[in-house]
Image (cartoon, rainbow, N blue to C red; front, side, top):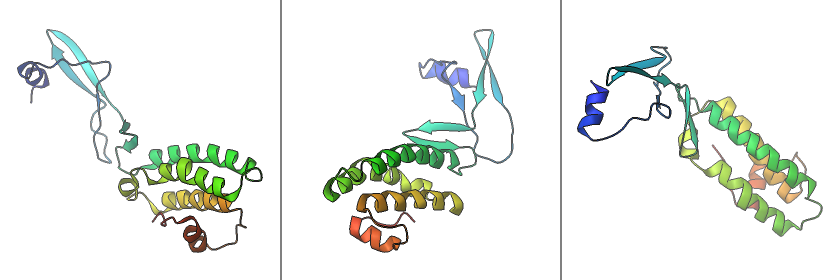
Length: 156
């Protein structure tokens, strides 16, 4: 397959600075592809993780990077939520959780739900923590009771 010929036939230009590729496999094959563009040798680098529509996809499809990004974002907001939980009434804490936290867990969850069980459990811990802070109930409360009160579905 000659990439440059295909690009010419389809009247497309290749921006080498913005182009990379990913191979979905556990084995390392090549780190870059070399192309001949008008007598000039150019190369396209392989990347191990790529962000596509907000989903971080890695070459092993483990979604570890995506889950770690979610954890960092949620942890920042949990801190803010915890600090203001005594200032806001229950109605507004629930609104905060539903509007600013729940979408982070729900966005593309059907895709990254194929991640490893330990990574999903890390997310589940944060999910429960958000609900318990919003409801201002002790950590010992059952998660099913908490989800029912928040009208949330379990993550997995």
